[in-house]
Structures are given as C-alpha cells and as structure tokens.
Image (cartoon, rainbow, N blue to C red):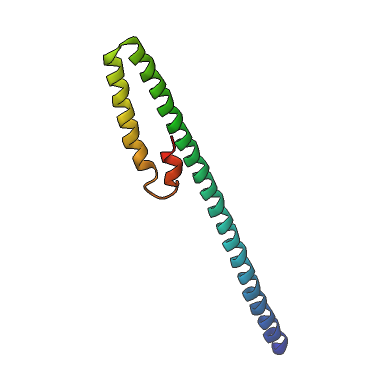
Length: 107
C-alpha cells in the first residue's frame, strides 16, 4: 500500500509541475496580448489627439485669416495667442516618444 502511495505522490507532483508550467505560459501569453492591446489603444488615442490638434490649428488659422480680412486686430491677436498656446502644448505631445514627431509637425 505504501508503494502505491509513493507512486501516486510522484505522479501528482509531476502533474502539478507540468500544469503549473502550462498555466504560467498561458498567463504570460495573456499578459503579452493585454499589453499589445493597451499599446494599440494608446497609439490610436494619440493619433486621434494629433489629428484633433491639427484640425484645431487649421480652424484657428482660417478664423484668423477671416478676422484679418475684416480688420479685427483684437480678434487676430486673440487667435494668435490661442495658436501660441496650442503650439506650446503640441510641442509636448511627442515628448514620451509614443508619437513620431513627423506626424505632429506636419502642416
């Protein structure tokens, strides 16, 4: 009887090690997939942000041109201030390296 218990214990230990390894591999694979998904979401969000910045800049420039044509110097100065603020903020978007600078700086 004792011999059967010893054999059973060895089989159980072998199975535990084998399954522990399989479970570890599955968890590592799941974690890697989760990180890839998060990275993709972050990149997509960053691209939306950059596109939004470009569109805002284009809109402000068009509005500034309209105000210049109307002779509204006060309005033009206000738009110029907004563009400066936008430029300062836009300069910081690519600081962490997630967004290529050529995407940010395109006009």
